[in-house]
Image 1 (cartoon, one colour):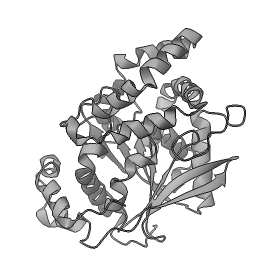
Image 2 (cartoon, helix red, strand yellow):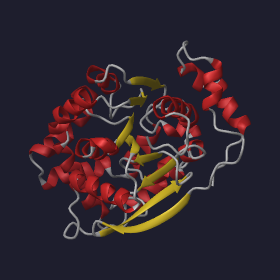
Image 3 (spheres, helix red, strand yellow):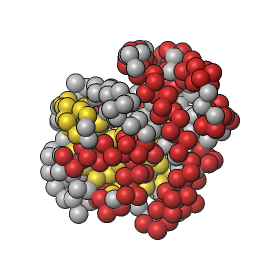
Length: 334
């Protein structure tokens, strides 16, 4: 269990975090959003039967506090949130599930479970129903964006805020790196499947996801990509991932629907982006402001997995944003 001292947090705030704070933020407001000096609540690990399978999830924070649901991406799992959760859990109930086929969740065969983004969203929705969570904020990273935006469109009344971290809803966010996948979406031949498995599901690719664009590669723990790859290399999982990579082609066609939701509902949004990410370009971060003029956008000098280098300043941004949007009462669910 990670426990950060106030000295560590203060050092982080004095360094990387302050470079991202607008001049208009008062010092007193910053201090109010810092986690308290007491030890963080413990993160616990659970497994529950929902939607015809078993989902694993991590949880931390008071049961009666406002809820933040953290949705991971590829090739990761809820493990990617291990440092962020303790920085939020004194004030918020933080829940991070693993999708079927990922992390510690079950890996039913494609004959037993439809590996599509529609079904992933359904499974997360049923998990939240089983936990009797009626309103929540969503943290959307990578695959978490198409999962979470489906939930938001289906249940707009449940969404308190949206926090987007390197998760796409605009064409501007997808560059030429996506061309092999675009070809696969048009014609999913066995040859293209093999090429994608080699390029996107290999150890070299998983390591690249973590290191490309970071300030200091030596600061990124190797167990990140070693753990992710061990999970990807389980029997049947590469086939599962190829099915999801193919179904990702359904997401760009939903961008107009999601953008209409933004315009019509105007959900409060915080956009946090590793600006050196070659997968989801920073133009995709700024694009949210086209439909959500009040969206707050902050770029960090790091790569795709921004939390690996910038968990503390990102946590600070989240705490400030939610404090303003939801108020300071831990028990209030509006």
